[in-house]
Image (cartoon, rainbow, N blue to C red; front, side, top):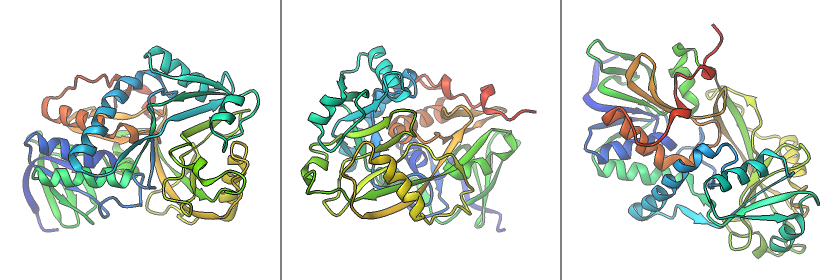
Length: 392
């Protein structure tokens, strides 16, 4: 250990993935001296911020309380795309299919109605007519919204990192944080293999590695291994054009108590495959030892379930990969100052549905670091809420 490795900073950001890269950009843009520490390479594929596409939507079945944040996030997506010059956002529509009382359909409808979001309710026949690749159950309903689509996660992270560096942030890669501690003067120190860094404030945005960095807080957090697959459709049965973002929306489907699936149109040409996955697998894992090999059994289980909505998804598996969800006990986010450590702000546990909020979470973190508060309502994400904590 070599002592203080990099002087003193206004703020250190641990993790430069989805939320950390956005925080580094927003903080540096406000004139703070920012040090970002990342254990891997820029826009890596070891955590959660990869896989080519992520859904963005506003008719939010997880809870209508999220919708105001989504509205601000959408403004941020447009701003990030324009400022960075990268191809990040595609709005191709979104369809949320299920039994009339299912969480996916009913929750989406409640959120849309509560916030006056433009939407349509389609029955199964209307879904088949509009989207011939789909064949939902006869009794299923779908909520369709035009203002949904997908973003490119790797391009998002690279855009935020580019902009953070442009505003003077120091970004260090292949340098995992081993520990951190509060200092007597109200600041923090972070220890890596290269030494110790000091700062007035700390942002923990370490994704699947956050539970290890926050282990002393007694939070009920877990890391889950997820599997995502790309399959080739039968283009003789349904022409390729019907599978593209010109004619197929992003989608989530939960019918007859089956495990819900989500997915995307084809975005990378006829050879690129149709990407889809189970919404949650609930398989607990450790980020340093997770099995990244996908078995034939796993891939075929996803295909079998997916064919209940896409009967012509019969071609070869193009590829499959794993990603990691870091989840809280109540599956809401954790965003805010740590109890007892007001100089430490956390935004790492988004329970598998956080990427669509990246721009607004970056803004919120910058607010909290610079002023201690934010105009956005984040009471739902309070790190001190009782549901987060393990029994004593």
